[in-house]
Length: 270
Image 1 (cartoon, rainbow, N blue to C red):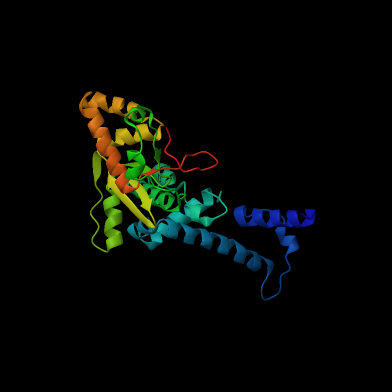
Image 2: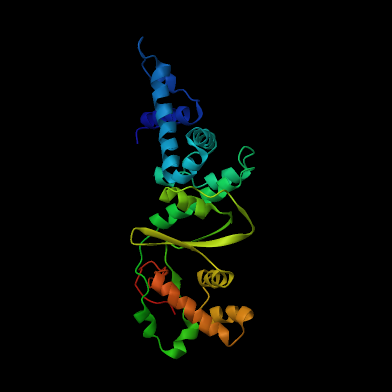
């Protein structure tokens, strides 16, 4: 790249991002549109685009907070968090954490949970595609192979632990009905999200299924999964519960037959 052009681009970027730099001397102004006005167009356009991205990525949070308050939040967040991805689709990945720790918003922790929920939906929707495991794939396995069987979660699967009733608030806004009042539970509730085709599904997880999915995602084989469940259920009941969970995961499209290897050859890992 031309050195002079690169330096000019860097100067403009420094001005747009931080309000510093030497770009003014490279801009020609007129009596009608002085240099400061010309540069302000770029600065304002940059921040406006990021505000639009946050509103698009967190639509229910924006409606829950109200337009004015959300714009205040967006401006504060933009000042402290520059985009790190090429696409603004991924702008806002730190918003939940920002809401949780910033003095202005940490006294309303439901906001952080709601942002966590909406971002998990974004990740699930944009996750990579993969062929889902079918019951027939499992039927082909010999009984002696089951103990060493390793299953792979679909790339869209996301788990979030929430203290507040953010999913119920989100659902109410989506359906256009009155949203419930924010409620805090005594213990975090585990939620599972995933995508089928272009539709996002979600449901709450019980402690046993949450534990089983945690083991699956940690790379445990089916035998190890049964062993982990046996601590809760006993040696006799654990295999039946593991098989029941496996069937429900397959029916929901939560598992994939694709390996995480580079060739992406569809197969059931064992």
